[in-house]
Image (cartoon, rainbow, N blue to C red; front, side, top):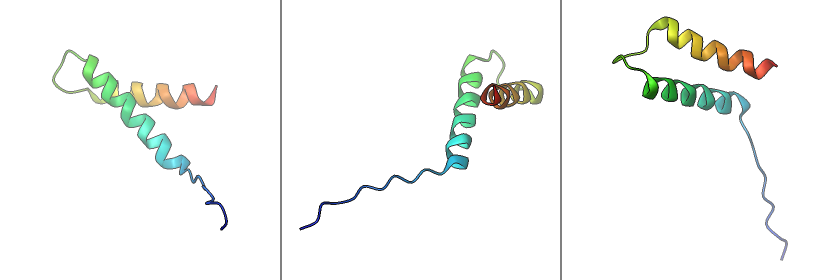
Length: 54
């Protein structure tokens, strides 16, 4: 009997999208207003993207 092989497949695009969604959720939970402004959304998303490039 051969041992089971565990293959790990990662979808890097999906993982990046999940990270962005997480950052938006955190920003929304910290916001005082009911909805995030478009400027705040851009700030959060661009901050994550810029941080990933460093």
